[in-house]
Amino acid sequence: MVKALDKTEPLLGAQMRQHLGSFSCLGGDCGSRDRRQRRPGGQSCLYTQNGRNGRPVALTKQERRSVREAGRRAGAVGVALPGGLRLKRRRVGPDPARVGGGRRGVIQGFSTDSRRRMLLRLQQTDWSAGAVFFVTLTFADDAGAFDDWSHWKYELKKWRQRLTYQYGERLSGAIWKLELAPRKSGENVGRIAPHFHLALFWKDAKGPNMASFRRWCWSAWHSRIDAVRARNTEGIERGKLLSYLAKYMGKLWTLGETGVGMGRTKRGHVFDKATGELFDTGRVWGTWGQPPTSQVAEIELTEAAYIELTRRIAEKGQAVGSWYLGAVSPQWAGFALLGDGDSLLEELCEGIEGLTIIRTGGEP
Image 1: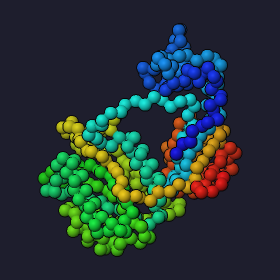
Image 2: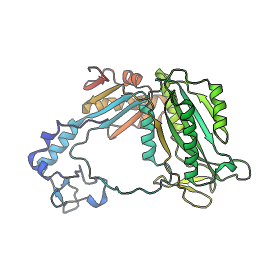
Image 3: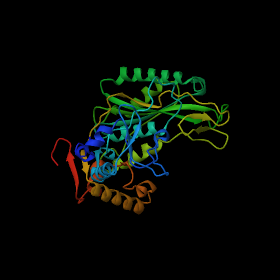
């Protein structure tokens, strides 16, 4: 989504390029405690990691000035998607060293990073390419609701196989999301049980008959189901749909009253408030097949254009009472807006000097 900035390379200086390794930082606080360096007397310094021995090397005054000047000229880039806008500042210097890796353990919840990736996938989706059905699959108490997470995914896999057998030629793909919620009634009141939300994308504009599709779902699933046809999938109304999905499918799991339901740790792990036990959930969301995607345009902004755009967004947020839009600032490294990509381009980007819009498959 974000293009590399080649124009800033000459601004860094020959001596700095020799020092630049896998990490660089502006100012004293780089976000990593073990790489924070200070000059004698407590003053923070701009430094880079030497590629040969891995030791931090302080930059000269001229090199620091070159980096800051490059940062002021860097600007930002972004994309307009069917479901909104995404912008990100260009990075000056090399990318930070990669941290982590190795074999992953069992997923235990819905983290903020996972939520961000899911919302990006929803923004990329072309909701007007064909009919869209929203389906909810629940688990009865005697249908493995309190079994291990692998049983839930096995039941979902079987339903997908039946769906592919019945409607495979007409179905483009699907996006699914696992939800956990405490039982509100019955013998198991308060216990955590799963259900799945799905968005099914059809190749044709109408899709199958809804009444017959519901009857098939009841026969193919062991518990209660619900299926409705998606609305507000075109034009400016798409913003309402994306806002609803972001709130409904993107909510973080912190349900129930004190001592009841689920809690969430800072890392996104889910636990039972009554027992303190962590939940193994496996993957929380995913895709099947090839849900339709598209891109409206690419955006390139100078620094002045990025500041003006964030000012317009903040004014709009204050006018409509949105705390997120009202808090958008030029200091942010990036942000995302939900809505119709075309409408947001016309409303927010018109008349901004230094902003270039390159339509997909066309010229600026």
